[in-house]
Length: 251
Image (cartoon, rainbow, N blue to C red; front, side, top):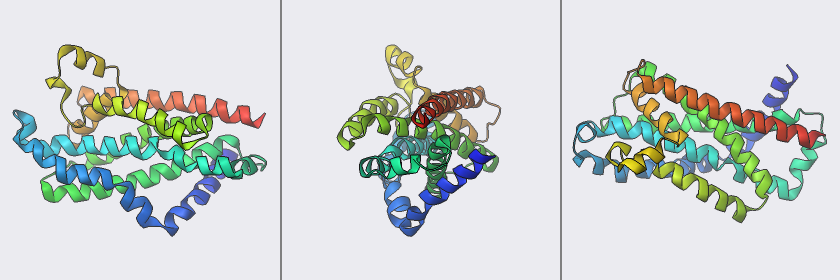
């Protein structure tokens, strides 16, 4: 129970600056998906096949996956100033659980992500997006689960990099291939065989396919099970590495 109590304490500590300046966090943080929604989404209406006839049902769930990827993968930037100023080291001298220091931060990131995702969904409805309600709820839970894993990996990378320019380089190297091979912007079914095969090694593509099935109301689709298993696996691996890293600091 102590870890839950300490996680809540860290979550409240992290949420305070967010609530003091919500515009910077919620508005600027979701500017990229909104621009994609307004400036890129209409281009898909002319695509051939099912994508063109129902482009918003196809594009918006992928856009939410992009929001989850960028919203949590960049979370480590918030830790770097604390590492540099010594604030993080002072927290390590307190009796707060070291694992809770990580989980409390991630919980704050997931809270922000879910609020942003709901706003994006509401903004997409006037464009013609018609999500299934139970599918949307499950889709947001899947997004949060993946976000926990990506957020932990982001904080671990920040602890290793400790400098913004190194951390930015790591993010760009990892996130760009993940996005291009995820099928968020264009269907990977249209790719050459070799590129499609490479994309199947990208865990994000399975979550994107699951999100599309869920928001369409197809809750029993095999892609939902695959996406859920991939999200659980990513988060489980992140929790193992994150717990080991934080306990090593403790000793």
